[in-house]
Image (tube, rainbow, N blue to C red; front, side, top):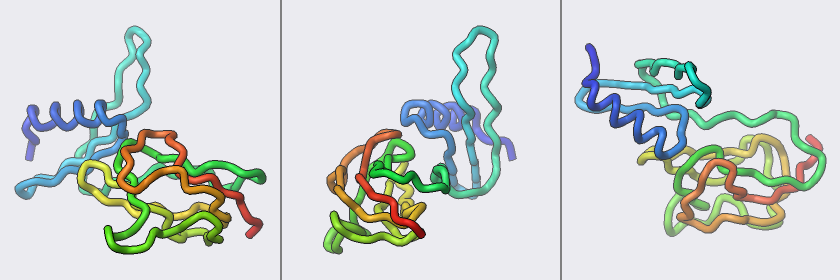
Length: 150
């Protein structure tokens, strides 16, 4: 089935406006997955064509080797930061907590899709920099952490 070009144009414009590189869209039995490459604004450059397939909105991976000094954990994309799994629930982590690799840190809502973001390495939370329900952009510092040896 060929998707409606108006829908594709609107989705691609929304991706550009939000600064996201991947989008999964489903409606009335139609499934569209768009992937946007790095922007090259030089004359004569072309952008990669979007691909259509079923998938979920992934969160970009960071380097798996933990840094040795105090560092920050930053937002991977535009979205809404949530510190806890529900409004009346305690936050996933707070300052002073020791966090294991794979332990949930926060939830990022991107275009009505909730993604639970987990720690990529063991660390101690030094400071929580984002407040619950803050709008964040790529690179926004969310936590200051001290990596721990595994």
